[in-house]
Length: 147
Image (cartoon, rainbow, N blue to C red; front, side):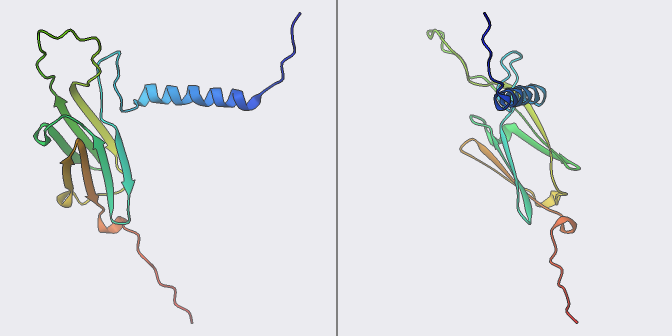
């Protein structure tokens, strides 16, 4: 005999949400290792102040000279290649999760940037870009006159 089960719409919505999130991550990438293809891209944080857009990218184990940054219109591109260190012939690896190979990450920026004043620093595996906004996109205070 079948047992009647109560309808739990919130559980179904939660399951649907998880599936949609997984589909978006599969389509756009999560910034993590794509094990099937051996590809990877650094995880990034993008924030904004009144004066600048700030991008932080996790790119551990690389030299700054091996990272290329370009800006075309409102699209920022961060590229590079992390070379695999030579393996010790006497070691028997049980697991290798370190990411190696080429990467390219393109981000559409939320504001127009002053290309000549971009500041890029790389410290402890974090690339930080401070991209100053063009004057016309900065918020301007408008004074209200009372008559």
